Image (cartoon, rainbow, N blue to C red; front, side):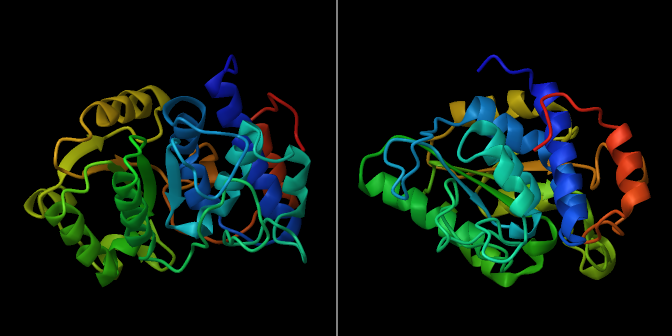
Length: 279
């Protein structure tokens, strides 16, 4: 696509802010922190088919585990062309296909699993990766997890399983912003060195120290793709800033699940000038 990725990044931030503001509900912090990642994935990295079907044969598939960051997911899907951008105005409203956590029974293009019950996305992704292998489908599985949800035990069973069964057609990214709804992850339940943990479980570990830098994300994801199919699952530890792009939302967990008021919205939008047209 000929679109400027920096322009789409700014516009997606605006979408996120306006979506949560209009219903006074949603999760802007993590959504803003993962904007660059999802744009890189959907606009450059993944092989996708906009004529969406659930099977996704011969295309790369993405699974969002931390489903509460649905605002960024919906915005990127709409801006990429899965459904009309104008539908973003229905976010979290009755009978909308854009529920607070992604679901499948509304039939929203781009959504393959209901997510938001934290700790389950990795297991689903591994199942999809094994299905690709059984069907001799060479495309890849991508998934995104929050760092806080790694406190859920089911993840570690899945991590152990993936390495043991050589699930090497999967690229898992961990959003390491160090914050969750009740505070810092270290205060809630410290996880120690995730790099050392994943290596000890038999995974290939990559890191993105500047997790809100589009070029670094693209570089690392491209490298990750080049080293798949080598008997090891791949994990990317991506260090992001919650609330990235809005100064008063950064460096705090306070905006994990809080919508901006009218004045705060105006302030935030002024920091992210319109580029491609609001919905």
